[in-house]
Amino acid sequence: MEPTDLELWEKTAEFHGHICPGLSIGYKAALYAKELLDLSFQDSNVAVCISETDKCPIDAIKAAFGCNEEKNSLFVNLTGDMAFSLLNRATGKSVRLVYKGLNAEGLDRNEMQKAIINASHYELFAVEAVPESYSFS
Image (tube, rainbow, N blue to C red):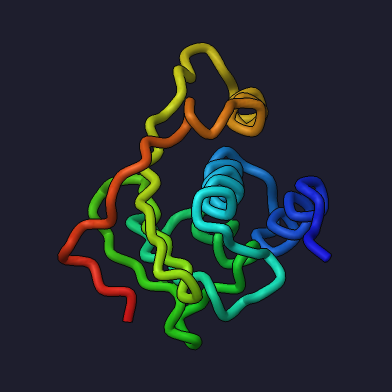
């Protein structure tokens, strides 16, 4: 049985150790990737991620999909973008989610985190094709 959004949020927060805007970005990326790629949070052998950041958001991807370096399902390619390319191994579908950012002017850390959680996927991410130079293996 798939976890609820709240259960997944609690799992990612426990895995990461604290709640922050970065974790919220990764959590929202995981939810969007699940929707776009017909992924499951139950099968940790299907999703593969190339993260373009090694910061907080990657922990949400790890917690949600079980991606990790040891299973060759998580790769880090530091480009300076807050972006995540994900592949569904079962279907071959892939997508690159690029964080667009939110207007954070005047928001403190907690307010920013809540704004990210409450924003729609469409407000947060641009959906692109995975760069041809990326390899999921």
